[in-house]
Length: 143
Image (tube, rainbow, N blue to C red; front, side, top):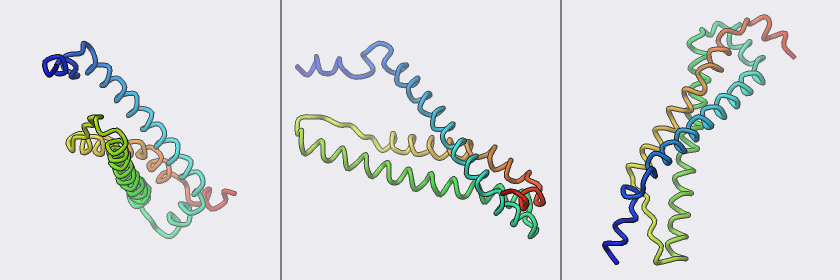
């Protein structure tokens, strides 16, 4: 039985690792697009605030860092909540189904967290750049 069970690992199932990488790649692209869209919407909704900051002398770099810091803060909070929920679900499933083996490797958690953080920052770069390029007069006149 142990020998048969050892054959069911992902290394022995053809193309499973490739399929997992494809799914992870699609998830990263979708996550990038969601962050991009939400930060772009945030920048559009805050046009007046950005105009006020620019009229008070904020540099383009300061505007970009404000947007990127907000994105990073939201991404860190999302990663912490996501990891906490994952461990809670793993614990609940282990309690409900004691024979079910759930492997949640810390390397996977760290890799997933890094991918989420990097993806969120890259997803917010263009909206941050667009916010920094806004003309203060047009932004203050924006309704």
